[in-house]
Length: 500
Image (tube, rainbow, N blue to C red):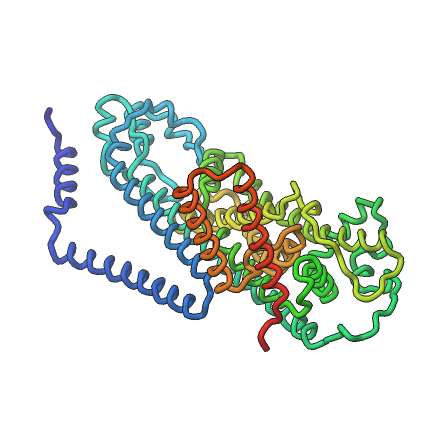
């Protein structure tokens, strides 16, 4: 096959760009820079992990390991995209297929052009925001067949960058939310210290009318249980100005202790709550498979004229408001239950934690929703900055200004509201479930119980192997003994007074 002058120029250009015709000092310099940056990042993560382990921040250390897993996944995605780009370039499709579901509308002069020019446009020679992008390979193979490559090299490269930016943005936004929310929760430590110092166990227990308790006045405020609309409206508004008050913290703390640790009124509820929140953070910082599925769906719906990303930006905001309202409503339900059952109370006000107050009777559902909210918000912000740096502000893919500004404002509102209101609410309200979390134990107690359970299981298996199958009732009795011992260990741990 003959090659014209244009083809010869392209061949010389490709030959000059090949590694075998690149100066060795350039190759060595670029490789050195990449290796140095990678080693520096790896060492920083390593020393950060050592610092967290030294400070006994096990939950945060596990969250750091989760971040490393995400970085490893990104590395695999990068390798997969690089290795498969040749296959993608040699996969040819008819040019007419590229005229559907476009993020940007093709200009009229291009649609009326001759077929060869239309094929070149579809193959990767197009203009976005005044920037001319050239597909450097694969177009010749498909062009000879009258078709175009499935994806241009430039588009593949930009997709690669977007996935990396999305993952990093999600990790950073989750960390910022945890830091800001943790700062809010640390303010409650003063309330815990006051409660610990205020020893009223020997004080006479006086009878108090239920309406005189501040917790009842703040959350019931004359609203009957039948007024569901007023109750939900009060819960919706309260998340903005006083998500968790001192009376909320004091009452829910006492309800938790009287339900799970009755023998230890000096139990450090704040420390337990922080440990539980840190344990949940390691789940939030990861990107699950269903979140990647949402990314694919959102990218599929990014069609010119639909303003998809503008409408999608309202989804995390609405979910965040719904979650905050639900958490406040749980507090209101706890107050209403006490107010309806008692006209007066002897001693302190005690609420009754229960899973029935939460969606699907599972407090864990709230964590999944917060995970999705933070990821979706990170997706919106990452997408904006990726488009801005790649195509420019005036590009058609950026959409119009009236649709861009609200997206950024909504993103900032979500970040602040989730940090200062929703996350602190989640930290304390989800403790009002039927069961406590394993973080109620100190770390050494957790390890001791797990080790003891494993040894007991091995001894049981070895006895069964040597003595043969035990009678029917024996296995249930052994299992029940293990369960009784676990519960006893739980009671002993909660009943043990903290060291002074």
